[in-house]
Each structure stands twice: as C-alpha cells, then as structure tokens.
Image 1 (spheres, rainbow, N blue to C red):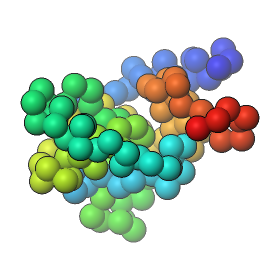
Image 2 (image 1 turned 90 degrees about the vertical axis):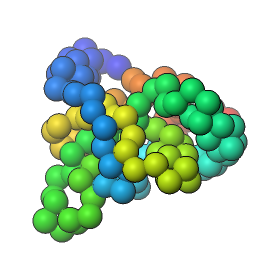
Image 3 (image 1 turned 120 degrees about the vertical axis):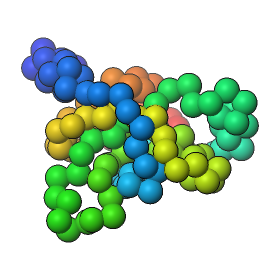
Image 4 (image 1 turned 180 degrees about the horizontal axis):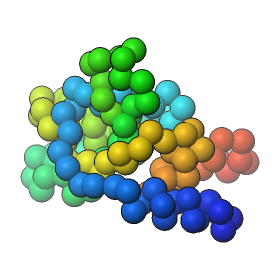
Length: 128
C-alpha cells in the first residue's frame, strides 16, 4: 500500500460509525474479491454466533443510487459469511461498521484488504 492509499484509508476509517443494520437492507458486492466457497464451514460459524454472538462486525458502505434500488441501503465490504449466517439464523439486525460515504471499487478493495490482510488479490500466483 503506497502513501496515498494509506492516507485515503485513514480518511475513510475516520468517517465510520458502529451501528446495527437490517440484514435485508444489505446488498452483496458483485466485485468482492472472495467469491468461491464463502459458505464453506458455515455451520461452525452459525454455532459460534449462537454461542458467543457476533465477535466482529461486518463492513458496509452506503449505496450510491438509492433511487434505482429502494430495497437495499448498504453494500457489503467485508463479512459476507457473517451476513449469510445471520440470514440463515433468521436474525433481522447485524452489527456493522458503516462507511457513510459511497466508496469506489478501489476504495472498497483497499478497505477490505485492510480488514482481512490474508485475502489474495485477483491475478496473483498464490494458490487458494
């Protein structure tokens, strides 16, 4: 991450708030890096949530054009498996770190990598 990206990341992080969001108002991000096997071992995650609650909130950003999609207000940045587990459990609200700004594709990538540094970028030679 270069100096400009670090500065941008800090600007974004400083504009966040912690809150609860409606599970039904969160849209999946079709450009999310992790696409395969996100439901792998979902049963163990569900059991953990039932036993201990959600230990780490999901990350969401405000959707840019609410006129076109009135059902959704948020786009997920990280925590797709946690969101899926909440859906399967039938829970209505999920703890979230909210980025009030609409984020660009690049900003979403930077923020999601900062949250989960073990994530591999597309086009790398690392094995899954």
